Image 1 (cartoon, rainbow, N blue to C red):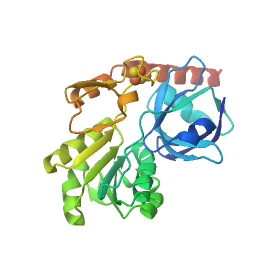
Image 2 (cartoon, rainbow, N blue to C red):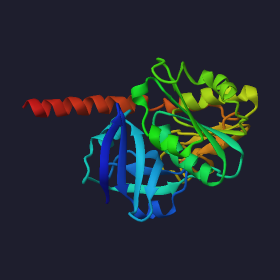
Image 3 (spheres, rainbow, N blue to C red):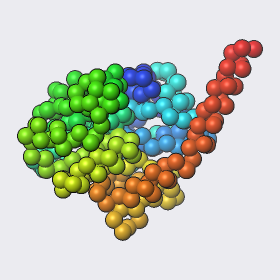
Amino acid sequence: MHKLVESKMIVPNIFLLTLEAPAVAREVKPGQFVILRVEEDGERIPLSVADWDRVKGTITIVLMNVGYTTDKLASLKAGASIPTVVGPLGNPTEIDKFGTVLCLGGCYGMGSLFPIVRGLKEKGNRVVAVLEARSSYLFYWEKKFEEISDRVFYITRDGSRGYPGHVGRLPEIIKFSGESVDRMIINGCTFLLKRGSDVSRESGIKTIVSLNPIMIDGTGMCGVCRVTVGSSTKFACVDGPDFDGHQVDWKELLQRRKMYLEEEIVPLRTSRCEEHKKESR
Ligand code: FES
């Protein structure tokens, strides 16, 4: 069993969990993920590791509450235990001396982007972080990013902080910054990964995205995480999760991610109704 050391909502619908997982904490590297089960016979969900403490043997994950299992996870309090934490899984993000790296993160992806930025800085890169959200109140860890990045830019859909709009503002931000970007790394929802890759394709900046397809075993056995990259079929869990964003078949990935939407959402609604019924008895 893995004890939850900390559990809190950091911005609406985004939760931070720190849990005991010494074997994972010992080995994990930026860009890797774990597979969790909240119940013995529950659904397995992949979650990127956002930070770790090798001495204390803990890992931190940032997740968005989107369905039955994430809702269960988000509702757990510190002191509760989780039966399964498998990892670290997937290949670490390539961290090398690239020059200037633009790191784009949104939603839960700001969490998993943080150790990548830290690793890139430790390697001597210049790092420009760009954080994207619907509104200013949805940003978190800004101080942490500002402390370790060379520059941080913000984009908000409603214009409440930084550049108004969406990731389509990137070329403008790059131009304004005067930076010559050698590589771009994107963490976040599939939509952000796709839009970021579309934007950088025009400027020819090599772009690495951390894919987040549905997964079951996370070890290359089930084929559920299948994605098409270039002309090849890849398994995101063992071949990725990082891939060249300009080579990913986004249409296929977006369709596959929606495959079990009903199964994720309906039990969430039903379980909440059951809880309400119990409370009103
Ligand atoms: Fe089963 Fe990747 S999750 S092959």
